[in-house]
Image 1 (cartoon, rainbow, N blue to C red):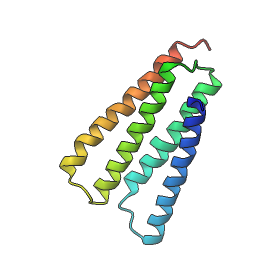
Image 2: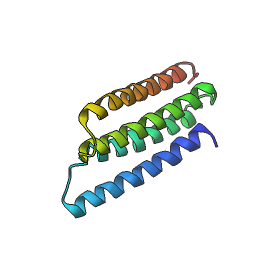
Image 3: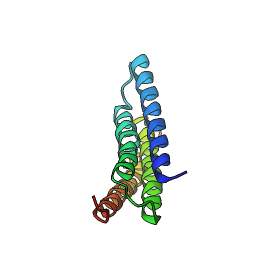
Image 4: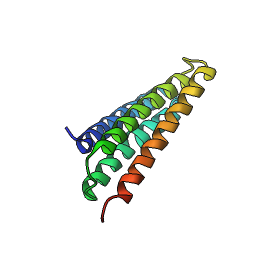
Length: 124
């Protein structure tokens, strides 16, 4: 499996999870997890698919940076989404989830920076 396939597959699975959460919120009438839903759809789903497209369409070299970027993005997204679920579900103290969210956000930002570096190194 390559970073392209991993990002595409996980992106689609993130979208499915986000849609299921959205369906649950709609049926229950409780929209308290709306921020979590948005992060699942955009951070997990859309961005993962965008990364796969960038790697494929622009023929970005699949080397160590691509593997690190993919792993970091998926791990940071997972940590952030779980922390958001606990935060907005009032299952954890904001004093606990806050630092976790901050670290996960830094992971996502570093992941984006790795994509920028790779695209700058690619001849278009």
